[in-house]
Image 1 (cartoon, rainbow, N blue to C red):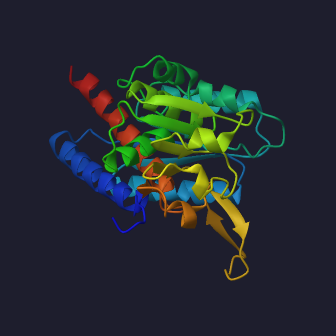
Image 2 (image 1 turned 90 degrees about the vertical axis):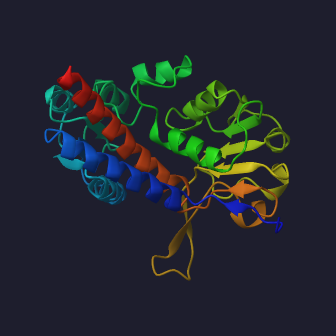
Length: 301
């Protein structure tokens, strides 16, 4: 080994996943002309960062042959009106996946959990409805939607070739969207998992025990080289903008891991950007195609 980690390019793996999905969708459309996967993206307001993410999702959908509908609501919408809007999408048999772009950019406070739980679990391609979250927590691994970022992380870990079963895995962060579901996925793939958070004592020494280290804490370059066991697989879910006067934008993106130094210790590492981010989008489209396939199977019964 050259002494530096192999870079796990989420950008490259996501491209392979999209190409495979595109071939599958094309074949299904030829066999079954009624097969038309549709993803609805619900947005409240017009935050520019949300607009960027939505464009990325729509572009990936288009590449695969999935139609996307951008369902925009004004900032002035009430919680009750938004619930009704989501329920209308639940009731539309031509829509297979629904995601709610967070954060909601609204004038009056709206409970985002209530909105994401209004999405039918059968169309919850983000995998964040409490029913789907509960199924994962209870060890089910198929027949429902697994959250996109954790699913992307698992795929990248598998691409490293590390044996998950029996490995020590440490997950930094316990968010509902990344940390907690990643811990569950690794646990039910038979790793021994430690979940860390802001109250964890002696974080560096806990991290040093990890064969697989997944970091999702939203702190730029917090994880240093001396936190990492030599030869560990490091998955960085962080995406943080830091000032950079050499860039036209005045900033650049970094992860939660000190990439330049950690890559000298790890065996595999994901970059930021072009690591976990593209995988999240690819898994969203994959979940949408799965939902459309399930509807097709039911229609053919």
